[in-house]
Image (spheres, rainbow, N blue to C red):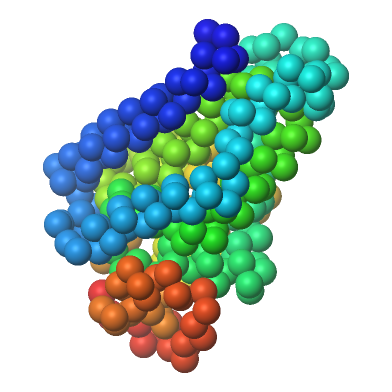
Length: 279
């Protein structure tokens, strides 16, 4: 497929992949739940509405998509990979890994920098854990993430197909890691050597801050293992442990309007211990 064809078909490919995987994972978490959080609830409508708003805002603020930038850079011979002229299969694998590593460090910064955390905490404030949590992000965070991806693409100049594959990996990883599914041990253990499983990512959504500040990856688990942020399990059983943020546990704090204004709100913090029984 030519670069021009990839660019033209990218919305269809990503849209079809998103809808198909979302439906498949929603079915899986209902058939083999870990926590039971996938029961129909209004929060799921709110989460899915956010992804629509995110798309509109991002396209308005940053209309240039990653694959379009990659096509332009490749045509001009700009970027690291253009200068190296390595075989395309090698380039594609390395580019996908490099972009994934960038997103890992972006995620760590979202937790470390207070201003960025204000936007990212919208994702962490959900009181349940199911596949719709994988699309619950504030528009500010999505715009920032798109800007970071564009900067990374401009720096390395990957092949357009690598950018498309990376976007599919990132999109699929966000949905998969937030799925309320319980894998049997014989499946979970080998997966953990390569992928971030839902079980591992649940740790990241614990109300305990030290657990929240771990397991930052969305796809491969290697970055967390390599950079010392890997945590195998939460202190409490993952099926019943409280998730979310202690300071945002009321129904009013979970409305769409409340989530959109949350980065501008400074709530009174509640101790984690107080929130351990709140669901």
